[in-house]
Image (cartoon, rainbow, N blue to C red; front, side):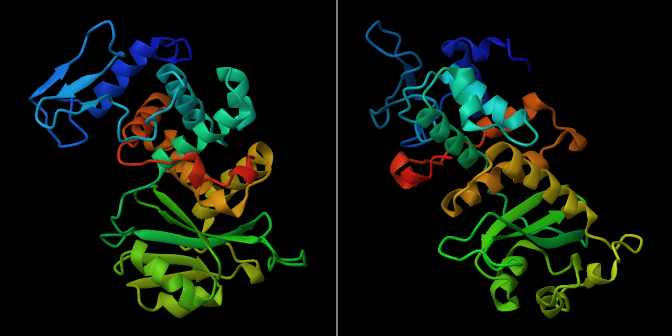
Length: 306
């Protein structure tokens, strides 16, 4: 997929591409689920792509019930923004999207957040199922709202991440505390008990590691970074990409939106070139994830345009 692809220039071509991805077997009514008794409305007074469901008598298009619903931005610009955000390893700022698409900054900012919503991982399969190795670690970024700047990490926002070595999948969450009672439920929910848990020497991992089939750790405080397969280098690599993107591209992120940026970096990492997913396929996977996810502007912090 290249920037001169017709789906990035023609709204009708973009709609056809979106329908092919979301309706591979034909239109599906988002209101009642009807798949056969539907009619395409091709009158001059009808907008392109409008379909009538003869079962529930409601009209719909491919964008109804998706993050693109009720947007006045042409679909070809939506697909181009999705491609740009999906194919840029460290992300792309809303300011750059604004310049490339010819929209306002406010529109570009909101488009990016809608696309990040489509990137959100809905896979509930626990990592490490079958006894695979899962790395767990935390990182710190920005500044926690309402906290004074101090030495160390007390005043920073906290991110807990997990990486499944076998599948290459990553999953990250914003957390308020790194105490064992607070992170244990998160780890237990996302990592299978039969997994091999790989962590550093942090006490909160030692407190929960015994509940796994195997728990190995490296002691970074003593300069130990690996013993054969025992290491956290994979997740450190993920953090490296995340930090470079957040500091170099986005520069500032309010805590209210940090989970969406994490969804973006998780998605690109879990669908990266090394796993056999090229830019076009990665974009199509985002477009396949638009259904059932809505994000209205009133749900975002308008004062945090960044």
